[in-house]
Image (tube, rainbow, N blue to C red; front, side, top):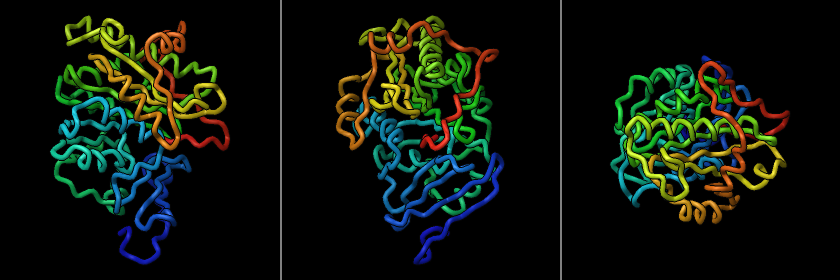
Length: 303
């Protein structure tokens, strides 16, 4: 088990969807980097689960901190488990939270349970396809849905469509927040299509009778913003972006302050600026959806 010996050694194992590696961090005694087919997936510090190494994970955490009352326990769904970084962090931030972690790779889930065990009865790990699990989840059963599913370094096509996002929004309570980690580079064809897709799903939820409030710059079904590092937004490199959506107005000012104060500041794109970024992009449905673009050789993108 990780951390029981003086010098942790890497763990390499074939899992369902590739080769997983757990690599110890020489600077932190019981911290581990998880990769699958050499694509970084998760970073976990067993001694300090509040330490969020990856920048995009911190941005997701900021969206949770800004989006809900301080200390409020949440019912959370994590689509994509990896090493369960956020599932370890949330109980520290919000004691009493209940969580479902959905991981499609049975071998990976077993590896994480063995080497990086999470013994928290409030966390349920379901080995299942994210789309299939979501379809059977109860309506208005969660406060938070985080979509962070990567097949290697790409978001699978099945998790990029209006039908998928609409189902995720169905599972959310009216005040809930949907978060998605995506990756792209200029000219942002995939990112723009995802913004259009989430916007369309929000409008559909509103039209279907879900609670909606267009105040704060949101469209008639809810509100949407994007969190990303300025260098990515300026087209200088391939990188991660976090989409934040809700049927209620988003706390953009509070979120902007948190993202700006990070060691690697991010911008919050919202309102007219988000509309300009989206441009004339069209939503994608199940018939037209494609996986996110493959990162260039040497690009460090995490999922």
